Amino acid sequence: MSHVSVAVIGGGQAGLAMSWHLRQSGTDHVVLERNRVGHEWRDRRWDSFCLVTPNWQCRLPGYAYSGDDPDGFMSGSEVVTFLEKYAASFDPPLREGVSVSRLRRTGNAFELLTSDSRVTADQVVVATGGYHRPAMPRLAEKFPSGVVQVHSSQYRNADQLPDGDVLVVGTGQSGCQIAEDLHLAGRRVHLAVGSAPRAARRYRGRDTLAWLEEMGHYDKSVHDFGDADEVRLRANHYMTGRGGGRDIDLRRFAQQGMQLHGRLLSVDGVSLTFGDDLARNLDNADAVAEGIKNAIDAYVDRAGLDAPEEPRYEPVWTPGVPVPALPTEQISSVVWATGFHRDHRWIEVPIFDGRGYPTHDRGVTSCPGLYFLGLPWQHTWGSGRFAGVARDAEHLAGRITQARRRRVTDGVSWLAGTPTETYPDLEWAA
Image (cartoon, rainbow, N blue to C red; front, side, top):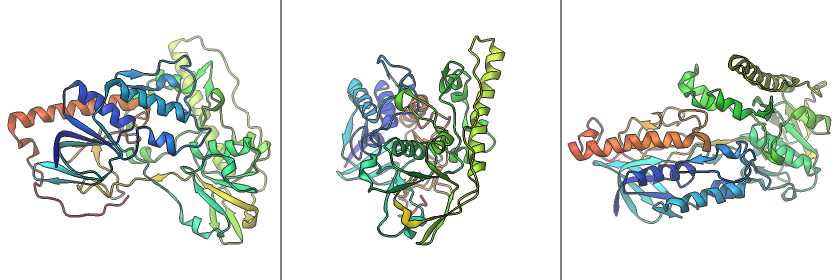
């Protein structure tokens, strides 16, 4: 058994950002990564994947994008290279291929059971993000056995699916981009449209995200909104970085032959039934996009900026009478773009709420010495992205340093008020 001051679990952008700060403060630590650096970008993205955020937003502690296309969008392989170069720039104490199957408090330290050994640590940072297990709805069980089904994390390209119509379920960023990928490959696509919002890629001469950053949107705390729990569950606005970045207009896809439907409600082995909410979902997505433009217009006027005028969006297609059912035999394959479940069952410390979400304040949990980093909307909109993880890592590094000083000064009194016995084996809802 080895002991370190801090154990960082996860070697993605969040874990590496944390390690950089710990290096700067001279804190002995280890970064445990189940696979390889960049695994999520390397093995769970489709071939044509590109970041939605522009390259200039790719900035980590002590390292930032320095290429010749700051307004472009990195492909998945380029993100992997970016992270590998970041790791090489400061040589973190990284142990790849080491998974953690158990984390618990024992005595005055934390104990980690890994695939390599047992590790104890004074403090622990869980930097595994929030997307762990593919969310496959029970409806998937209702499809005939001959229909090929894949989750968005397993989709690579149109060629991996058999000939015939493809149903894509879900219109978050992944669902819309995969539907476009299949559409551009000449496949007949049926898209079950949900309530995800959309945003224009560019407006009034700039990328929309550049406007939002200048307007301070990335600085807004999750607690600046009415209900933090609901904000954390919201789907991201769909757009794409493909081809230099562009809008995703589902109405235009429909005009070009893509079949749009409302939410998928049921599968009975003979037919698929959809809701009658297609028109409402498209209208709501458009309203969000236009609302963002309204906010930009107001900002331009307040600041007296010289930004070119731009005509507003006009729908190019509207739904007709809803098609309530589709024969199952018409579908050869399904891509489930239905997101992910969190999976923290390996953490045997009672810090989770009834939905399995770790309760925290900017990543600091109620258990002294245990932190989370890289969660979506952990503190701001950018917390789970390159855009904001650096700031969150800096905040936690400060808290870790303070705790180390108290531990040195007061022994282990900073742990007062917390149980010192080993927690029993517990299963926590994901």
